[in-house]
Image (tube, rainbow, N blue to C red):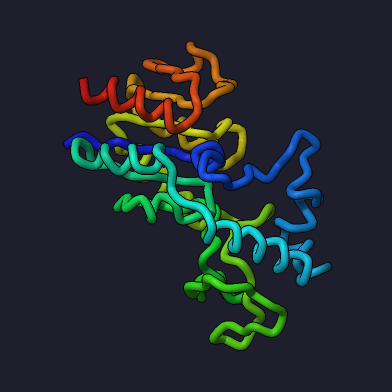
Length: 227
């Protein structure tokens, strides 16, 4: 069974009603990105940061996986599918995908402020005073700007083994995730699904651009791969 590796970004969750957060001005829900997505921001105003992610978590509990998520699950009948996502939601898991790796953390988990390996499941608000097992303040299990991406090496390892690479709903401009495409073998088929693709057709060998939203784009992907 061929190994199909899928890189997903905010665009795949947008159709479920999850905001892609960053607007044209670089603001995230009205906040400067460094205020709510950096260790410095958390140190300066932890309650603001906790509230920001509490709202994101609350929103996540009110949405459902969309057709694109379910289409990726369908592909598991024909391929060994591995999903590497930049998203912090759990919509791939709720669509029953078996192999999902989160590069940037997960909203429904929390972790120690002092030990990035001390992680717990968490579906409610995190408030100041909620402590991890080591006695430190709990924080969102999110990879913030300036922090290491602990799952990157595993993501590279998976991508290197891809027989087919699919990229959905990400501009491939956010590093280090954007660098993953460079780890597939030469001539590996690459399918890029995005309504406004910024990649050129000749950017990679064997590249197919599907100019559409994730749900319709994955419909087309299935018809191509399963014909």
